[in-house]
Image 1: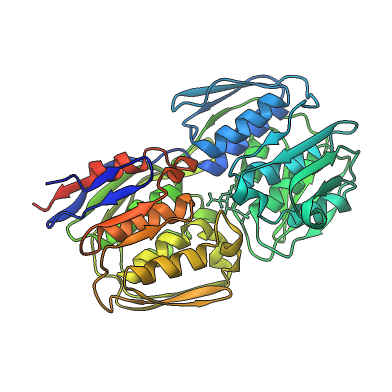
Image 2: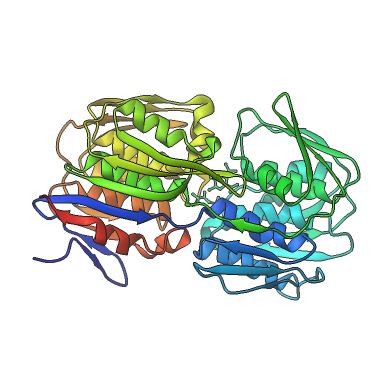
Length: 441
Ligand SMILES: O=C(O)C1=C[C@@H](OP(=O)(O)O)[C@@H](O)[C@H](O)C1
Ligand SMILES: C=C(OP(=O)(O)O)C(=O)O
């Protein structure tokens, strides 16, 4: 019998064995958001920063390479220990390449806008050059930044002429940790207090880590306040496992008959646990063990076992707390009884791909009934068994991994392409999926 997962250079063959289940222990790779921030803050600090458990995937590699081009010393990104030795900030001779990573580009804009007298240019891959940058350019311009770009200054490639910036009190129209972090990074170099308010709380890793590095961060009525000018000091950062990567196994475990998976060292920062709450509301059997606090971030080991799921309604302030998990949530919904309605999620249209259209079209190809709205989807779950087919990942890592879990629970074989995009956030994904595939006892 052929193995359930077969990789080819162009794509991935997924052949669910007749008595498949998923069992095992998974050490989820390091959190991508925290990995970017540890590298960036390490370069802003005095002294060495040591990072353990960093995510050695393509997106943090992009951040690390841009920071090296800006004059800093960063040892190769591996699963072990990474050392960040800050150098003199240089005006790079080359264009900074942010690859596929929105976090890299938006956080670097905040970081570089205030480097008075220096000039920077930034670009990225096809996907990133199509993503909106106005959301960070607007507040940074209010602080005095000079940034130019394609399409009326809204798309990369972008050019930044560093300026002395002024602090602002910004009332952000979107709940975005990238926008908030870009403003806070710019505010670090300003004299006085920078404030950011959001319509709903987004992930707070920047605030937690800046505080650990010695910045003066406070909160007042939901507004984050940063006093500029503090000297950051190098730290030892321990990166927890990424909830956004754990989410694929949480859903795989919940929908695959007989499954029992233990995920170790997963970050359970409340700004990231929306997916746990929604899966539990759907009836998933999820148990958090050994909850603890490591380097300012809460961690747990999470066990998931198969159970029957029911559809739910998801929207409002929950969306920023599970923004990257919505593609895999739609897979849970396709295997649940009844309908799942996801609204207020228009942001998914400007991620690495249009994730609403991607999941709607591909789940429909597998035989699910899905309705698409400007800001969401309705998935009519378990109407009929899904049937394996040819699937398109839109070259988006989260779409590829979500479709793989759906295909493994469909009847018959699927072929999914391109499959290499999992390198962006989870290089070991295919190997781990293969290892978890077990015959039912
Ligand atoms: O700040 C971060 O590390 C991220 C914030 C989110 O984006 P937005 O800020 O655009 O919501 C998320 O989707 C992205 O994967 C990572
Ligand atoms: C949206 C994502 O990342 P970024 O915005 O950094 O490209 C993601 O990882 O799902």
